[in-house]
Image: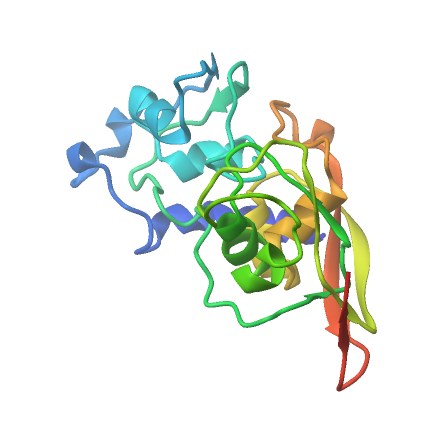
Length: 231
């Protein structure tokens, strides 16, 4: 089953060189770890990093345990599950990475992108849709002074689509991970997964069986050698 293989593959990330050991666990005695789980209700002052520090966990371990869309997308009153401690807390592998994007249109769409808290033109383009900033900025029709300026929440941006192009969509049982993991597995983008699941932020369900089913665009491709960019 696809979601099981993804879950166990991601669980192994904490043992890789990309997982950053906590300073006080450079030499780890597993018997000394706090293997209990608990819950924590976030405040308006919290970030994934402050919560991780509070509980001496890895930010990415917490984000994946709560099936977050993005480790840095957090509001007040999230009820987060705090996972057991591990020898190598993961602080980096779940974070969105700035892409050296060259695409000027999006394969398979969508036509609209709805902004969330913290979005900027740069973040949407280079971190979420893997497109050039110019291709989104020039078509946004928004009066922003900088590509780094935060955009109003729930604003719809028109995204240039590659025509002709297509994506297939698969239902996916999201039991572990963040959208970045799914984007890498299904060769899609975080932004395309977000737009297909607009009401989802995270899951506080302790049971995998009760975890959300989401829609994941996959196999997005152009249907011709020469495509046009349409708004």
